[in-house]
Image (cartoon, rainbow, N blue to C red; front, side, top):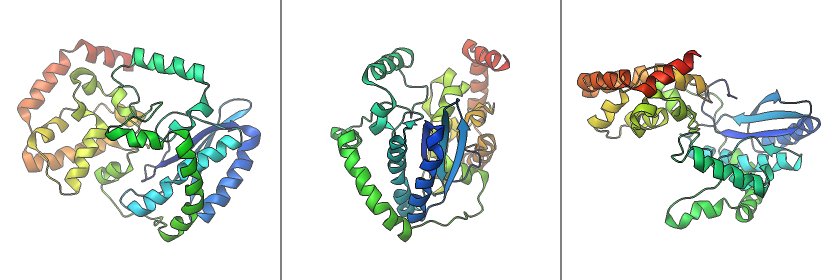
Length: 297
C-alpha cells in the first residue's frame, strides 16, 4: 500500500477496521483534526467482506519542527480511537509498539518474534518494522513506549494537540524544490528499499541503502561536511529502480540518485576506478544474477 503524492508527511496511522465502523470512525477523526487545525487525507481499501484498511495521512514538513512535533503526537491518538471502534493496527513499527497486544494475542506474538529471529537475524527485511523499542542509555525510549506510560502520554496529547496545532499549524503549500530535496524530506524511513536493493544484497554495505544515501544527501543540502569515501559509495548503484517500485511515499528515487551523483561529481569527482570494481563485482555475483532472474519471473 502506497500513499501516492510524495509530499512531506508523516504517516498518521493505518488501521484495519470493520466496514460498518469505518464511516463513524472517520467522522470522529474529522472533528478531532478540525480542532487540531490539521487536514487529514484518507485512503481506503476494502480487504474483505467485513473489513476495510484505512490509511490516514497529513501534510507536515519535518523542517518545521514545532508543527511536526505537534502533528506527530496525533498518531497514537487516532490509533487508540480506531481500536475503540473495533480496529487493529495494520502493521508493526515504532508507533504501533504500544498497541501490539491489540493486534495479536501473546501466544501469536511469541511465534512471530521467533520466526523473525530465525529467518531475518540481521533485520534486513523491513528494518523499521519491529515488535518492541529497544535503545541504549537505559532504554528510556523503550520504557516510554510501554503501554502503561504511553497511555498517559496519549491522554496528554489528546488535551494538548488542539492547542499546539492551532499555534503552529504549518502551511499547506510547500516551496518548489528539486527532485533530490523533495525526496530527502519526504522519505518516511520505512526501510522497504533495503530489502530489494541488489547492491546491498551483494556488498552488505550500509552506505548504499537508499535511505542512508538520502541521509548523506540531507547533510550535503544542509551544508554539512561529508567525506570523499562516503561520496564514492553513492556511485555504487545500478539504477535498477527497485527502490522506486517499493517506495511507500511514491518518490522518484532514480531521478534523485542522478541529481545526487551529479552534485557529488562536481565536488569530489566521479570515482571511475571504484565504479569499475563495483561493476565487476556485481557481474561476477551469483546472488545478483539470481536477483535479476527473479525480477524477470
